[in-house]
Image 1 (cartoon, rainbow, N blue to C red):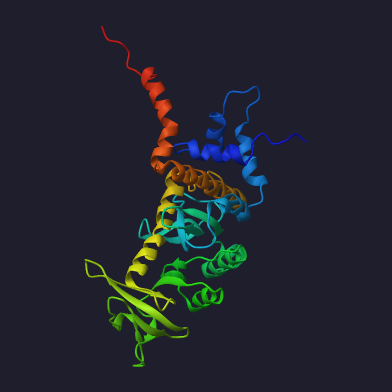
Image 2 (cartoon, rainbow, N blue to C red; image 1 turned 90 degrees about the horizontal axis):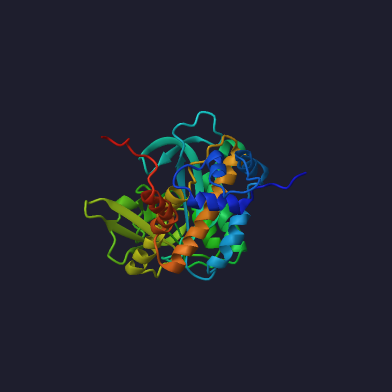
Length: 331
């Protein structure tokens, strides 16, 4: 049997370099000139022959993280598939980008951050029909794996979707502190005055210690936005101060930047394949491409946009020196 002409690195480098089109055909067209260059089928076979495995991402991410300190952020994002008719894994999901339910693939990521770096260390694809696992199941599984890998984060940060009692208790049982937002109907007991929704609790600037029904004591913060909207943050760190909450809540936003990065610069949404295995492998390769992009940008101090543009700029310059598409000369 002949060895495969395309490996992981070839596909990852293509995803980092291509501006928009991430198809196997385009990957074959841009390969360096060679006696027997890989055809598009070689890239397609790569996506189908590999075993989807998040552990490969971790092996490459491990040297980039500090397991003592920083934060672990859990969140999910919908990869848009608006024209998917026969693509596996595509379901109806809520999209924060569109503020509506759309067709797509739901990617759940565990991200490590120190406020500057964005390093994905684990991920899961939501496919309840295929594996009977909920998003909360994936949440707990990824944290169990992270604990086994020796992580001791300052905080585990996540949004209200993952703030169920089972998740909160698991983080506590792992010996970690958590910081999350609570929905307004969560019941708490302030100063033994009886259970009430957090929406009916007023707190001081430094927060208030309350009893969360079914869990125990937490510190609750009320945040009022300039437009009057209210948000309720909570933590099991009873000594947390308001400025500490602001700091680590800001760290949580790094995962939103990460979602933007993998979509705009690593083509995670643009796999032109149907099979679930191929989709999973494309997503894994895109996240590994992001690791390389993030590491380069952190070391050089440039933005993801500049790093991506720097790949394309020489081609634009060459075209401007010798334009191919012109109008015919007039008399």
